[in-house]
Length: 211
Image (spheres, rainbow, N blue to C red):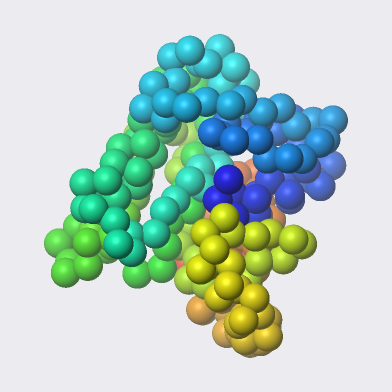
């Protein structure tokens, strides 16, 4: 389970106004809660076998993501673009009244023409999500995220960076909202935007912190 997927999960479970939370993933979250339901699913290109269980939800927080470092271009595109659009197209067909929220990243390239590969792929993902007929779709672009409340990355070198830079991350989260947010702030902002909307579809770190 990517560390950032834990951000909205914790906040959703703590929010008294949220009645039910469904997590779809390849491995268990390891958490127990009365309103948490989990589906273990291997094929993220085909959700036909679980469609009936995906209905009836007000919002989707799509937080699956990988680093492009050392990854083949086609595989990165598959994991970033193909899987995201497969999930979104399934959900919008089941319930166009849903709000879809996608966690992407700062410096995403909405022109799809820039020199940085990952930014182009993220930009195309955002653009194509915004074309789908959801009630609303929001692209969250955090820069840095300070992990709180036991959030850990499954990628060992990323977790090591979190540990070594913890004091710096804490300082930046307090004093540089343009460049840093926290896992708690990100989760709460996603919930608030799903409930109440936001004036623009793309939210940078400063927007997330302001919310």
